[in-house]
Image (cartoon, rainbow, N blue to C red; front, side, top):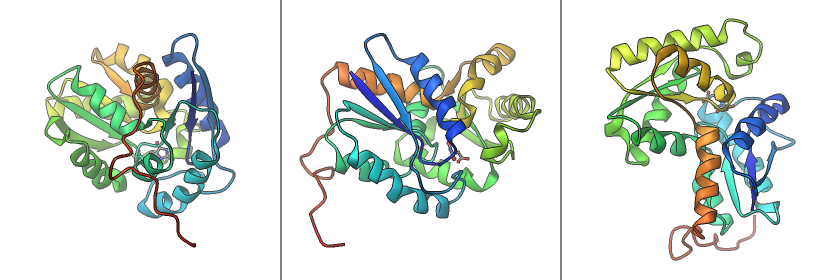
Length: 231
Ligand code: 5HY
């Protein structure tokens, strides 16, 4: 089985982190590659960034050959529905995988993401995925995506934001709202004593499961290939 994980931002060091966290989540017999487009924003933390990154992301997925499933590794799940139209193989976004996974683990979950400006979009996708009633709150740690790698206090700041989220929301589970936080789950979970879900691992495992079950995206209506037209 071959899975392609696409980081839609162009920060190669984040793609390497995503690759190692995704690999750790899948079983033997899965070949997992992670890539990012050559062009596009170095991080995605606005509607504009998502809009700019999406055509490059779709080009990568559309050109990929020989993969049984795809992960879109950015917490806003940019281009997810369009990608489902492009390929037959299952495509899973890290936010949808993380949120659905969290619903198995507790009554309610809190999302801790990067910047306050993405809170609205995070709620929008929680509603779109039908899990908003299980989401007790969305919180920001106010660390920009690219600074997750360079800020020496990042883990402590995120852990504190998670602690406050649990307290404030009365929730049972934390969802980390950025692919760049993928390596922090275990440590934050050990510190706070609750399950902490990383969408990169959750989505990779989800795609592996779908492929193993022989399930692919339905091409009956909405996700049929887009009508060809001149661009
Ligand atoms: C992500 N941005 O997972 C999102 C997180 C965010 O470049 N990778 C990004 O801040 O919305």
